[in-house]
Length: 381
Ligand SMILES: Nc1ncnc2c1ncn2[C@@H]1O[C@H](COP(=O)(O)OP(=O)(O)OP(=O)(O)O)[C@@H](O)[C@H]1O
Ligand SMILES: [Mg+2]
Picture 1: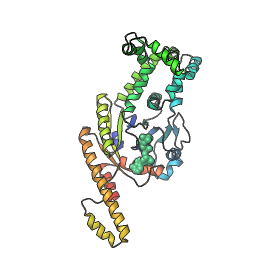
Picture 2 (picture 1 turned 135 degrees about the vertical axis):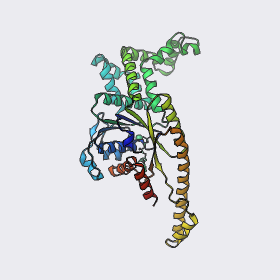
Picture 3 (picture 1 turned 30 degrees about the horizontal axis):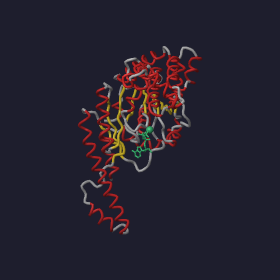
Picture 4 (picture 1 turned 135 degrees about the horizontal axis):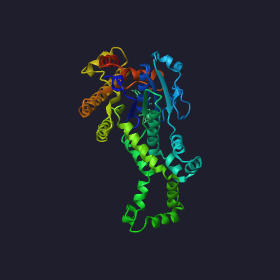
């Protein structure tokens, strides 16, 4: 099955997966392919490699999608019937924009932006990228300027972070965690047997940080906005669970990545999130088949110097082992997917850092099953 068939009728495609498996590359290739087919598509990328960002004309962090000029795409030779738009997420700016929009007055917004708790929160490495990526997706979806939004997800080590971090941050903003801590029967009290204020006061003496004062100022400033955060969170959840959203899982064929993919898929199911399929990226295809390595060696010996022949044969051997391993891991994944498709993209010789590279990935994602088999046969040959 092709990605185009998977995304038929969808407005949002979320590409999740563990660190370094090819989420950014795949989301850009998907957006390119859907734009080629006539859709107006925006891809929201997170931390793309510099060369890829340059290839898409993304010179700096910007917080709105910008059209990738058709001339940039021309060398791909692909006819783009629709429009490709791209942006690089700026978490801090997205967060600031949100506060500015929700604050009752510009002055209140400025006070929040200057608050120390807010500054820490909005630049925290973990959580703020996930939270703002979803916030941006939600706003773009509501504005309705695009037929399809493709969301790359942050480079967290664990794919599940992406699902969990926004909720954690939202609960914090709703003040639930703090309220629970400060309640006379709250965790703070139960564990310490005395008011949390005393503990935090003690901390201030030691660290010089008046955490309690900072936190209570922060929540005073947020005031009624905590309810806006809750309301938005409910709407975001509705968008993510909607029939017009598709979660695509990107993974490598390595064991840990496949294990994580299986977990991710189960978690999506538990959370009622629409799982569409898996892309297994950087697959090693069997170039030897059941062929005899010795025979390959013997044939090469006639063509190359003995040292070179040994080296090449060894390389073949290594690749063969990798291919077998990939095949076994993928076989383990398939029964977990309830018939949802697995799309294989081979391990290419070069990194993917330009439009031509994206096009090579795109060919595999958008091919029919027969075309894909044909292309893999070409790689193997
Ligand atoms: N099929 C492929 N063949 C060869 N190289 C690839 C392939 N797919 C991706 N790459 C390369 O692998 C590297 C990681 O890819 P990418 O940045 O898309 O991963 P990511 O999942 O977004 O990583 P992170 O979790 O750090 O955000 C890049 O250098 C990219 O060019
Ligand atoms: Mg990435």
